[in-house]
Length: 170
Image (cartoon, rainbow, N blue to C red; front, top):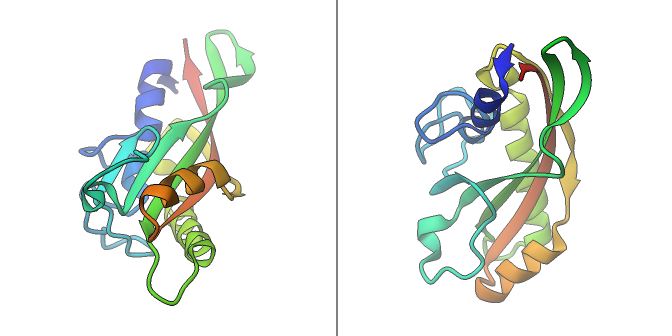
């Protein structure tokens, strides 16, 4: 059981921690994929937030993963004294280059599947009080794709949604 503040930070993770979504996108604290990752994804940027739409130097930010909290965060499904079962709804945006000869929609689907398999291959994101990580689905994020493609026509956007459930205390 974790405290709410700790849970919020550990589920998303950070660049230096070997737990959370940011770590398990490529099983590494850096850009180079970790050896245990189901798919070797090299990521120049892994942060919490929405992707930058206008970026004059896209190689600094892309390929990249951007973790965004969704809806009310977290939502509580049950309570027992000070212990709450919380659901964390999270969107993970993955932006990468579209190789010549492929469509951005095809590349986005492939990226979303690889990203999902990396995250789902982790044991509860490396956090002991997490009871489960559930894949919700792949989204065609039309608005985000449209904005990014206006500035960087060769980049594709994929969004995968997850629901993380854990026991926290307030």
